[in-house]
Length: 419
Ligand code: UD1
Image 1 (tube, rainbow, N blue to C red):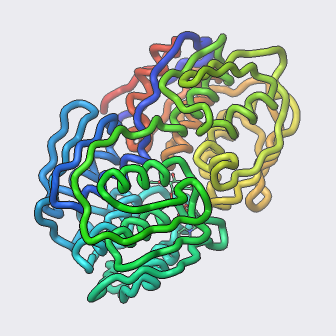
Image 2 (cartoon, helix red, strand yellow):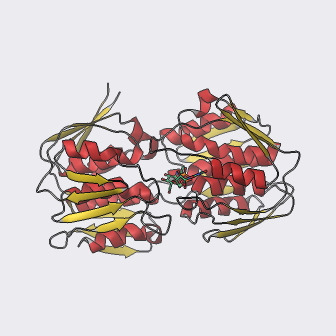
Image 3 (cartoon, protein in one colour):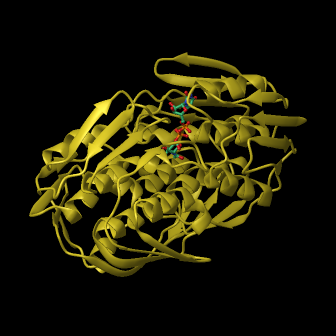
C-alpha cells in the first residue's frame, strides 16, 4: 500500500488548478444510464471513485470511453442489477438506483460500503422511491426497488440531520421519467445537485428549482444524449485554501467558483487570513496572527462537513480555543485520534470538538481512515516539525486528483512511496 511522506515546515506559494468535482461527477455519470444515446462529460476527475463508477456502468452494460478528463458513455442497453463485487468499494454507487429505476422500472443494488463516517442509512432515498409508486425490498444485503410504473408525487426528503444530497439526486433521477409532476420538498441545495439538474435538463428533463429547497420535476417520456462540463470541486478548493492558511506565503487556486466555497473563505477570514477573489480564482495569504474560531457544519450554503477535518488540522495550531460542532455526521471525528498522535490537543464532547491550539505539531506515522480525514493529516503534516507518514493513502486517491503532485507544485516537500 502506498504511503505519503511529508517533511513539514516548508511554506507554500504559487498557484494550482482545481479539478472537476467528484461529488458532481459520480451522480452525473450514473445519470447517463437514463438514455440509450451517447453522453459526453468533460472535466471528470481522475480518481479511484470515478473509476469505480465507470466500472459499475460497464458492468451494467454501458460502453465507456475515457480520454484524459473526457468520458463518453453510451448505455444502449442496461442491466438492472449491480452486485456486491462491483458496488462494495464506494458508497456513492447507491446513486445508480434512481436512474435504473427510472429507466428499467426496477433495480437491484447491493447495500453500499464506502467511507466509514458513522451510520449512513439510505432510508430517505427509499422513502422517495416508494412515494413514486415503487415497492422496496431489502434482502441478502441487496436493496431491490421495482414498480410497474412511476407516478409523480409530493415528497419531503428532509431527515433528522437535514436534507440528503445523494437521496435528492437519486429521487430526482427516478422522477424525471415518472408520469406527471413530482415535487421534492426539503431538497439538498448543494452545487452538485444543481450540476446534476443542469445535466438532466440538457438531456431533456424538466426540472425547476435546483439550488432551492423545492424541486419541481415534470416527468418526460424519454431522455436523449447530452454534453456537459463538470463544475470545479469545491471541497478540493477548500482543502487547498486551508493548506494555504496552514503554511502558505500566499497561494492562489484557479478554476474555482468562489460562491461555492464562501463558507470556507468566510471562516478563514474570521481566522484572520486575507482572502482575495476574482470570478474564478481565490488567493489566501497570512495577515498577522491567526485567531481561533467557533464553527458548525451545516448543509449548503453552511460550512461543509467535508471540510471539517481539514479545519480541525488548521485550528490545532491556531493560538487559543476553537470549537467545532459536526451537525451533518455527528460521529465524523476519526481524524482526531491521529491528530492527537501529532501533538494536537482536542477534546471530543459528543458532536463537538474543543481544540486548544498548540505551538507546533510533531511529525508521526498516522493512518488515513476516510477521505477527508486523510486530507486533514496531510495538511497537519505540512505544518508539523519533522516527517509525517500517512498510511492507507487509497482513501486520498478516492477523492483528490494528484494531491501530492499539486502540493509539490506549491513547494511542499511531499513524496509518495510505492509499496
Ligand atoms: C454527500 C457527499 C458527501 C458529503 C455529504 C453531506 C457525495 C458522493 N457525497 O453524501 O461527501 O459529506 O453529502 O454533505 O455526494 N441520511 C439519512 N437517511 C438517508 C440519507 C442520509 O438519515 O437516507 C443522513 C446521513 O446519515 C447524514 C445526513 O443525512 O447525517 C446527510 O447525508 P447525505 O446528504 O445523504 O450524504 P450523502 O449524499 O451520502
